[in-house]
Length: 146
Image (cartoon, rainbow, N blue to C red):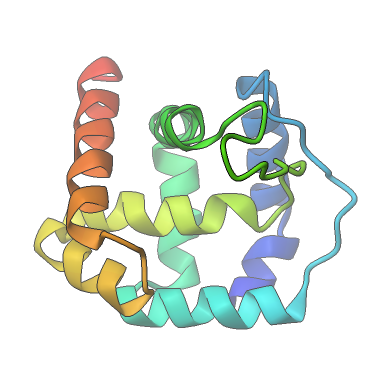
């Protein structure tokens, strides 16, 4: 299975609709198309993390509520409703939005030691601090959903 196959699958679309219902404050643009440029970037992320699309499909089936909670925590922590000091506009989420979060979730679950390396490879600013922050979000998600 490729990432494009995953994004087009009924299982992933069902996941998106359920995630949309879970994220009450995050607008979703369901009719957004699969963007080949974004797919290539996300495939690069998956390569850096050594994660296949099949693993993402298995994750969204097996740990649906946990991944919803993790994504919700990250959006709450890193989104600023008014745009913040940089006046950033928070656009509606598209079908591509969960992929990066799901990659991080799998790394935190299965290869926490590889998380910092992955974040540096994908050029996340202040990767070490970010890794610590999301690891705490992951832990609280796991505890709350056990």
